[in-house]
Length: 285
Image 1 (tube, rainbow, N blue to C red):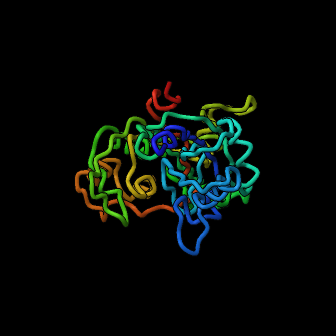
Image 2 (image 1 turned 90 degrees about the vertical axis):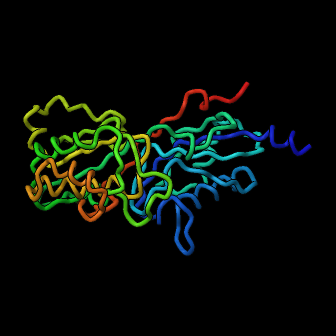
């Protein structure tokens, strides 16, 4: 009987987008409102049963998401595609269910992930438009993009990135593989748009080069705690000509957090996408 009950449970995957400003982060914390708490409360209100919701990334307070992936097991007979609208009724306006689907019972949002993509937005001008406040890092000083673009090439490949890890040392391994990394000035960007390489018809290419909006993007098989924000702190030092581009290679080789730049604020960071093996994204049978 118990085995039959377990086999009848369905594994539901959700893709979430959220503004992280009003939360202590993804993970449940005492005396603070978390995104996990809101999602678990919504699933309970919809299905009548409390579910443990697992996430691909435990984003920190203030960090935003466009493509956070979570999953939970349920005995509910609600059609998988109906969870998107059903849960939205019980969620605050700054948390959105983008997609819902049934996946393989072996799917685990945290441990099944094979690749994650993050973006970080910087605005380097003396005056920050009020509509960008809370969504970008504001640098009052102009940054030189060319040395920063040279510096990020040292991030590619497989390295021990413990130099960019803060607060909680990784006890398993701090080796990660960076597959893709880029840095460029853009005219404007919509957080929910997967591809930012587009430009309005009335904007000339040279205007993008003069734009104060800088977009950093990195894809890796995993990230250490505050890794992206520490990388940004290091790149900003290079953009201000306080360090040469080769400094990134020196920091990685040192394996010492003190050699890297400061951990930058969370509001410029976005979890964009999490990838999984295709066979886990469909129900068995």
